[in-house]
Image (tube, rainbow, N blue to C red; front, side, top):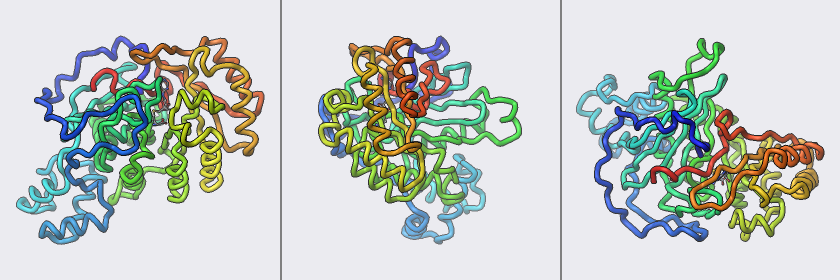
Length: 407
Ligand code: SAH
């Protein structure tokens, strides 16, 4: 989900402080299958169990089943979620013998950093992680004047096969665990605490620097890995020490439009922001751009998004990558405006994103005048519309290139 073209600093040498890669283990099962819709993630060895996979009650059980007192679970949670502690030596309220066993049993290493790149004068960091089985995922940490956003992955690869997205082209390797999803955020929080991200305005100096926003816009379709993704959302939003205590409003769930997944999320009653990757208002084109549309049509996806708004009161984002001469015609802006207004007013805003080119793709971003016209046509329908800046000022949603460089 980084942007293009890469700023000069983005090609900075890989950080010397990250461990040298070791030999990757062979994948345990078949390789991902690019070029088709894949729901069922290939089965591979499970990631080790982690505290962040578990509810507070399950943590207590897990600690007890290791032969320790139940209250140790809360101590571990406090170290992990509240203090962001990663050094077992500092967990001095746990007797030494207990400590190593509990850390091994509940705080195993899930992510090994293999590449770390800096962009935008140090205000953007991109991490590539190796998971326990050799699968590689990425996250991007971005600092703005009043917020810090991390874009996280929920699957290694993706099975949704959108032809303009590099991740989609690589196919699905496997689902990530809740722990692996949460660890990306905890890593980021630690990096911030160590002062590794430049930037921020004067108004930021006083307040402690925290990750304020999490967007599920990295690799993967999070709603196709529902259980782990919702578990991760709970860990992020549960108050410390059970979780990181983030505001649900700062979390964005982005989806191709898996209608049953959207409905399930609606029923959870957690007011995260929903982003629907629409990219076309008509089924004929969307079938091509977002192949899942052959299963759930534009109207079905929009209805589900509207139900989400009705239940949560959260305004839905419509993502629309503007692709030159493909989906950027004025009549498509009108059709989109009509379809959104037909369902109601004030429930939605549109985020057009100039397409980020990806390797092997014949498509490119719309011409600026065309882009502006598209925006104006939507606004004329009364739809709040904001272009996302491809340069990286607001790349929360400008995705599609993850896995291109490192996987
Ligand atoms: N599976 C989720 C998350 C994907 S990445 C989803 O589809 O919503 C987040 C956003 O980036 C999606 O809207 C996706 O369609 C968009 N995207 C993918 N490739 C892109 C590209 N090359 N240029 C611009 N946006 C892209």
